[in-house]
Length: 148
Image 1 (cartoon, rainbow, N blue to C red):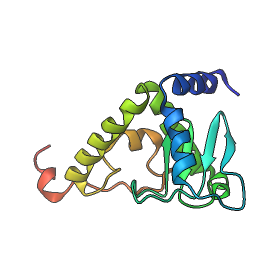
Image 2 (cartoon, rainbow, N blue to C red):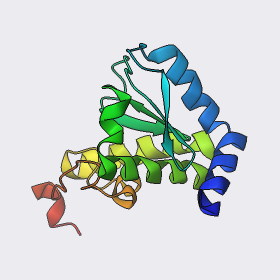
Image 3 (cartoon, one colour):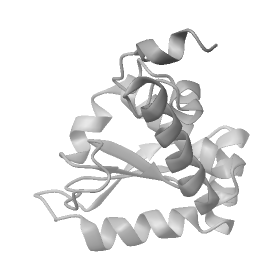
Image 4 (cartoon, one colour):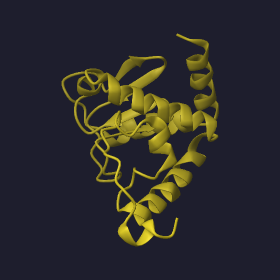
């Protein structure tokens, strides 16, 4: 494992974001045929079978834990989406852990107001790679274009 990933692993453990991700993995996922948590390399864990309706995303990251509505093996077979979620894990380290959650939500709200989409103008999603996350970049709403 690269030293940068080791640092991310330690920082996300200390800032308690990975602990929150593990708590969600244990309490909000259903156990399928395989293990509840699977290693994804670089210190990341994947938990499949996430059940609660929020967030609406098919995959999301909390600390070094990637939670997924489908089976964990599905994410491991999609390297671009895995890289996207790994970048979010690094963002947790930079944003001091769970502080990232309200920051992300605020940015998602601004993006929704600007273009009607949670991701297109959300800097967290843009820095993680919109295309890698399966997002299309949407333009500004027509009434916002003239005000730039």
